[in-house]
Amino acid sequence: MLVDFIDHEHELVLLSEKIDWNYFEKEFSPLYSKVGNPSHPIRFMVGCLLLKHLYNLGDETLEKAWIMNPYMQHFCGRVFFEHEFPCDPSNFVHFRKRIGEKGIEKIFAYSVRMHDAKTNTSNFVLSDTTVQENNTSFPTDAKLCKKVIDYCNKIAGNEGIKQRQRYTKVSKQMVRNTYNGKHPKRAKAARKSQRQLKTIAM
Image 1 (spheres, rainbow, N blue to C red):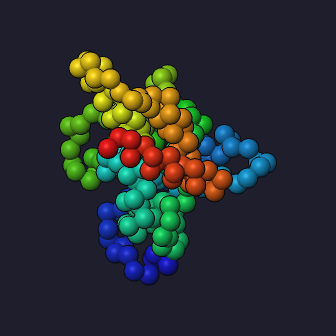
Image 2: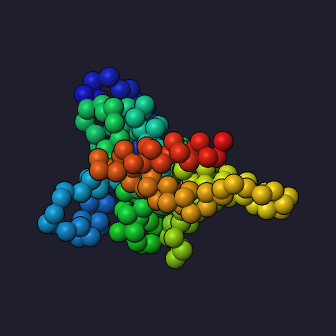
């Protein structure tokens, strides 16, 4: 169990004790349906979003840090140390859409207060494009490879170089195949498309 080996004076342990997690449960519970598959705990989702802003992490970089850090796991309400991230990073996008702009603002308020408590300063600007009307695209290895392919095609076009194949439509479909790549039914195709994109980009 995490409580058996973590330092109870660690900053994240102390912060987790100061947060009223029941407040978030009461605010966000009505947004969930009582039928269908059980969702991830609200404390876990809110805790992960707070950690993202405290340590300036992305949805995917948070996953790697969370697996290695028992204090992050404790902060999110986990009881035992876990070697795998409980959900796909794309679930955070769905959660942000579920709670909406007002919900994000409530979480931000806690994030700002924790940041100030941690650094004793307030000289920073906190913004999140996910509350805007446009759909925000999060960077992934597949999307970066797609950008490399498109940029190389642009250079070839500017220089008048004739290409045997541009991979424009093929690479677009491969990126789609990588979406929700941890789902058991999509994992194999996602890994294959990821490898192919890297090969083309090189």
